[in-house]
Length: 300
Length: 340
Image (cartoon, rainbow over all chains, first blue to last red):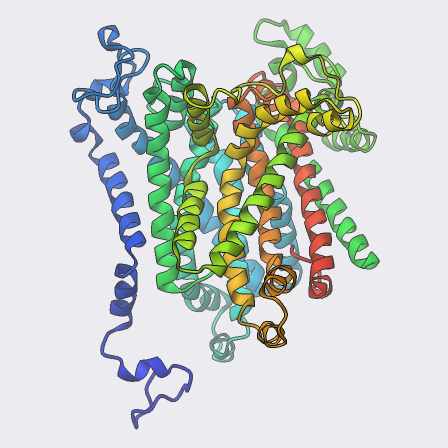
């Protein structure tokens, strides 16, 4: 905000005097000058692209289901089968491409519920304080004291193991991190003048929470979502790997690693290729998240 | 310090109570009759009814909860349907193996990541720094089970010194009856052959388990060291002519170790989670292998027990870290509630 006389009245931001770039251009410049965030963005884009256009990209779409081709079982990676074939002769590359669909579906499902819920509770706890804060934050602490994978295992076990239940289990644990993050931010923001100003101007609780405080959390939330996406993929894959997530013949990366590991070490590609595919996606979301964090300069 | 520790223990007790109730509620509200699940689809309605009576499922909810909590206070977790032994016995039988794996993993994390983090900070922006950056990124983004499989592949092709399954060669005939941790007991009893064998068994699983933490702790140590190096008293110590080695390791590392220790405590939850997967891959005879087996069998008492014990593990680890931080950094004691 500039003073009519053109001097910077805040007195803190002396970088802003030669401002010829808008702040979004600056942010983009910072993002672009960091090669690892560009690589991250590229990886994430490629994973999403491949997942959306899976039927067009996959060399043998029938391999995504319960297809068998015993002529070609256990064939090593070659020009015909880029990642080799599995124990019933399905093309692993095709299954990886479709596996990304399942993984991204899981990410959307989990974060679609966990983020709004966690953010809402965090806003409530930070804004109202007192006993609201006490109840919500102590409950969050208890939830955080449960090792997430152990809990997810238990939930998927009592419900029957499948993709939806895995999603429910992960969602039930995931919101806590967002509650904590938003709580911390809101707690710090509550001392800012603009909150007091809004209150004095007669704004409703709803307005202050969602119109004043929430916009200040958006950059932290988006960084967190990008970092989360990788870990949700990891989580889902770990559950499926233990046989508690997605069930065959749905092409899931974790299940593929698990089935493939029965044929180690002779047919190494059957476990390794889907494993590296998981690693690739997580790497992408992590690099992107780190890049966004540096760009927006937030702590998560 | 004593009030601080007592305060932490009270919080711990509350968290534990909440955890126990929460897990019990989740286990009871899920659809499906535990007695029916236990007996399988072929049992008659009368058998199921008898089982319900025996398991106390016909009692009102709060009576069930009360019985469960009082049982818990006496160390009774119910009976496992899979092994038909008390769950607590099964868990105590499997716990030492997991405990040994986790302890060794933490040992690896601390001894590898903190020195590497210090190195990266001292030789900042050199090739050492870049190398640790790449190692840490790989550690963080590689899922435990993928790394476990890669290590198994390497072991079977290149490093046959490392066996890929189990905890010890069954032919060695060794009874770890002192601490129940083979690595330590073999040293006490002076059996170097057992120690070498146990070490070769534990090494790969711990590396697979340690990688994520090593990556994170290394980076945190690096940035904490860099931050501390800007403090005035560090400059002053240098100006007094105190050797650089002492400044780095005695003065800077003490303050800089607060952040990595906090992370290690938080990381502990995912460590236990990952232990499930890594134990599964390496057929490690620990609590996780037991957990996965009982989960697949829908053995509800055992599942509750396993989750509860891993929660206790985590809560205790954080208590330990909190106390340690209180000793290292007195300011930590004053902050209400510690790191929580």
